[in-house]
Image 1 (tube, rainbow, N blue to C red):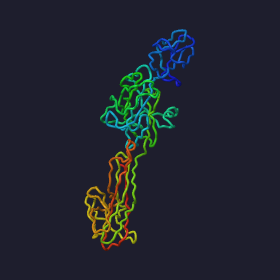
Image 2 (image 1 turned 90 degrees about the horizontal axis):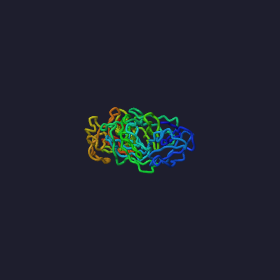
Image 3 (image 1 turned 90 degrees about the vertical axis):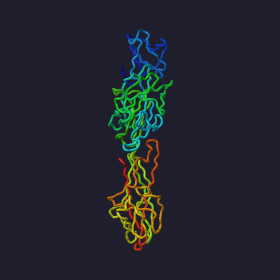
Image 4 (image 1 turned 45 degrees about the horizontal axis):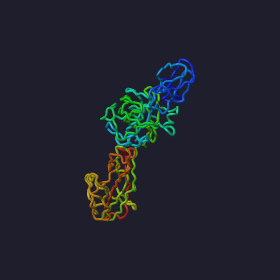
Length: 444
């Protein structure tokens, strides 16, 4: 077919043997009637521009009032009148149908950075048939993406400097393999499919379900797409190495890399990179000590991460020195014996000068801790403060608390570490302190 930048995909050209005026476009199904007055004629050819994407049109010819056109009873399309239409993003699932929608129809969706929850996603979008004959099975397309460089994807696409990248297995946005699904498998209707009808539809369209695509070779027409229908594909994708907090646009092109018409451009926005948050009431442990008694105090924290594998939190002294130090005078209280770990905690009392820690529910720590003040003996068990080189894991989250990229919420968890100290009659009363290091790292 011919091509031209000013032509629409439902335009056609008929060439005549001899010149004549005026040339008109006729509806061949009736043999008469001017289809449109919006056409261009140079005397030997006529470009007919049809209205409303060929509604009800069976066939077309042209007449210049002098002779029979060379292409009698035929028409030549200047572009393939396939139009990229509606779309919707979903959470990924290891199945032929995606999981829950990540956004409404034709709406920008968040996508996680590598390691962030929501890194994998699904996209269903349609190619509408605005011509009076089928888009045949076997027709192939290519899925491309580009960063959005201006205010809209449409304007980004119109920018001659825009560079589009074909989705592959190692591109910044790449295909995601789901082990239970074969790329190229035929898909079926899904309750949360995008709406099928085009922006300017004068009649209802219908979906013609095509393929699940996790390999570039499988983006093809599996079942003929009849007029006033739209093919729907399901793409399994992942954020392989896209730039954080950036919008990306998607489009389909023909297998010769020429664009089609575009009513919609699917669009995502990438999240920030993996983060972990640990917010403490204070990094200092401070306990009021009185001779022959023990006391305890909590150190509370709020923890959160968007890492899809969660996070690990460790605790230790700042150095090899694990002593609790009196703020006035420098007298010290040692930690419990190194054998008294979280799997072998002991009760402390005013008969021994010692201090330790506990986290409810961790290892062998039982019960729900309550604060104790100047009591002869604790009712809870305690473990030795680990030195810096022996930092102890006190919480390991296996999932993200921040699920916002997949339609959830950011719900930080609370973490409370309790500390207790006891003194004999030999220790001076007063406030004893030590700085504790908490280290939070994402699980990778």
